[in-house]
Every structure is written in C-alpha cells, then in structure tokens.
Length: 476
Ligand code: ADP
Ligand code: MG
Ligand code: ZN
Image (cartoon, rainbow, N blue to C red):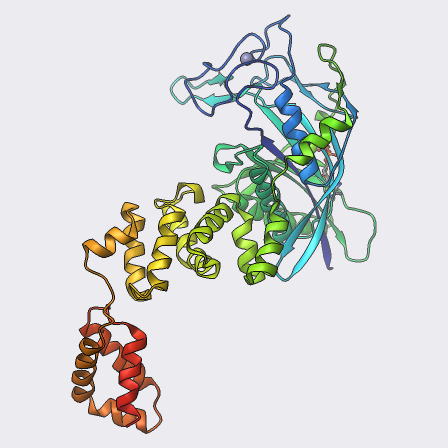
C-alpha cells in the first residue's frame, strides 16, 4: 500500500534576552552549575515571578515575522507536572490564549515553494538540566537554564516529507536570526524541535494516529528521525498492528527512536491561569512600534538578490538562509561593488571553509572587507584568479589583508607584454606538436600551451595577454 506522511512540528527557541523570563538572573549559556539562580528560578515557595517585558517584545517580533495575528489580550498558565529539573513542579506556559496565532511561512524545496501554517506561538520558561554523574551513579541538577525564556512555535500538520520539515526549521531559524530574538545555536540546544508524525493510506482523508518525538537538535537528526519513524509506522501497519499515540525519544548515536511514554498517561497537565501573573494586554500602538522596527526578512532579501542583482534562485536561497552569511555578502558587495563575484566566492569557497572549520558565518577567519579587497585585486588585474585562490587559502589560515599577502609574497600579476611575449615564443617553439594539433582542430592544445606558459611564469602571467600572444602564433 502507498502511504502519505503527515508531519507537524513544535519548535522551541530560547530567546536571547539578557535576563530570565521571571527574574533578573543571567541567561548566559554554561557557567558553573547553579550560579545563575535565585529564589524565583529555583522554585522556592513564596517567591513571586515578574514577567520580563523583553520576552513579550521578542515573541511579538517572532509572531509578526511569521505573519501571525497578535493577541491584544493573552495570559499565562500553569502546566503541572513533576520532573526533577523543574523544582516548582509546574511550568509557566500559555494554554488557551497564546500571544500569537494563525501565521505562516514560505518554504523553498527544490524548485517549488510551499506555505506552512503556524498554529500558534506562545511564551514559556525552560527547565533546568539533569547531569548524569558516572562517579556517584546518581544525577545532579543544574538550574542555570531554569527560567530561560522560550517561545514554542507550533505548526499545522502541513509537511509531507523530511525534506519539507528540514526546510521549515531552516526557514524558522533564519527568520529568528534575522529579527535577533534567538541565537538559534542548535548544538547548545537553543533551537530544538519535536516531530509529530503520522501516515495514512493515499486517498484517505482522516489522519492516522501520530507519535511525537521530542527534542531533536540538529537538521540531520530531524531528517533521520523522520525517515526512521516513517519506516517504523509502515512496518507496524503492514504487519497488521496499530500505531499507539506515544511520546518518543531519538537516539542519534544508535540511529533509532524508542517509545518513552504513552500519551494518555502523561497528558493531563491540569492547566490553570497562573495566579501570580497579570494578563498581558497589548495596545495597537505597541504592536505597530515593533512592526516598524522589523528588519528586512530573508524572503524579501532573496527576491531582491534574484531580481535586482541577478543571482540564480538557488544561490540567493542559500545565501539568505543565514543572516550571518547574507550580512557578509552585503558587506563585501558594498565594498567591491561586484555582488556576483562575492556570491561566487560564497557558493564555492566560503561555505566549504565554514564547514571545514565548523564555524558560523560570523566567525569566519577573515572579514567581508578582506574578501572584497581580494575581489578588487582580481578585477583590477593585479592578480589572476589562479593566484587569488592561493591568496584566499592564506587568508583562511591567517585572516591577513590580501593586499599585504600579495605584496609580501610577490604575487602581483605580470602584464608586461614584452615579458609575456618572450615566454610565449619560447613555449610555442618548444611544443611544435601542440601547434600542429591545434591546427588539426584539437582545441585542447591551446589550453595545454596556456598552462605551460603559466607554469613558466609561476601562475603570475596575465591570462588575457597570454592568450592573445599564443593565438597570434597559432593563427599564423
Ligand atoms: P500536544 O500538546 O499534544 O503536543 P499540540 O497541539 O501542541 O499537541 O501539537 C500538536 C502538533 O502535532 C502540531 O504541530 C500538529 O500540527 C501536529 N499534528 C496533529 N495531528 C497530527 C497528525 N495526525 N499527524 C501528524 N502531526 C499531527
Ligand atoms: Mg507537544
Ligand atoms: Zn533567578
């Protein structure tokens, strides 16, 4: 039987406010255990929460950037459950009146675009962290993360494949980075996704029973978990079984998921309005002010790169998927005024270097200005593109100014016609067979001769002039 896959995601993003959601403690990642804590975020009885205004502002920014309606009145609710990393034994979240609802984002998969609905975005506090201690055989609790603000972005069940799910999370990550509300460092857990997935026979309208796999924190594990869960559900159905609605975990090392708990057992959170916090009331003016400060979003940048600069759709999509990369592109293009060349360097060498070094695009070893200078050296004819590649590798290692590298290593291109002609005459005289080949119609012989001349000139010969002189010989 043919099945259709239905996926809906719940994405949690830690907000990059300086302080926690209900107290003044630092949100900084890491730190010695239990050093960013106070009576409020450690859940001491009687300690009262005070809502951090920035959290509301950031969540509204996220809502506006994803085309949501912003609630003029919302509230916070207690979600009761016991877990050792949550000393209050409840999380403060939002139940029936979230801050943002009814949004959507556009994703680009291959050649086509698709709209993914966003059901809601609400604010809540993060839990602490359990540190499983091999030495004592027990677990330790670190509450530095307890009370760090989160937004939870719940999607409609609109995705149909792992590829679409990854494209959706990439899009959200890009948007949140652009609007500056989260650093979205997946490896530090500041962006993580729960995957809800079901399958149904093609043609059937009713959704199948879904499972929810919690806390995936890389694109790779999202994709692998989805493929695994599709195969598992298919094999259950095909062997005559039924899918149980359950919460699952993904073990990235083993490459497989496993059931954690049945949904029915765990789902009664006894939500009730948080009595220690006032409802959140927002004026039209407040929302408009936030709207006015939103920066240009990736979708708009992408269109601008395609229509105004003439970048291929694919390249524009890749460059704008990361704010850091797109900012780098704009900064370099503004200096050298050759956006296409900047784009080419990004698509080939810069993405590769970032991958090799395992760094974000704002942590590259060289500046956008230095890339621009490198491009200007080529455009002015000071160095050849072959030499530029060597200079670039040096920049990757040392971050040095390309003008300095070229000067210190004596890499300036030779454009002196007399000097070039001398080399060409010598190489042509030494390779009569290549000349004969070219005349017999073998165009490759030209490339060979150019290569020989370049070698003789240690890569520094001006290729246009070289070509001109060689062709003069060949066409005699
Ligand atoms: P819960 O709190 O039980 O996790 P939510 O309403 O917060 O429920 O989230 C449900 C998520 O599951 C949403 O992203 C939704 O799109 C998705 N979803 C709901 N039904 C299905 C289904 N049958 N198959 C796949 N995803 C589903
Ligand atoms: Mg859920
Ligand atoms: Zn605190």
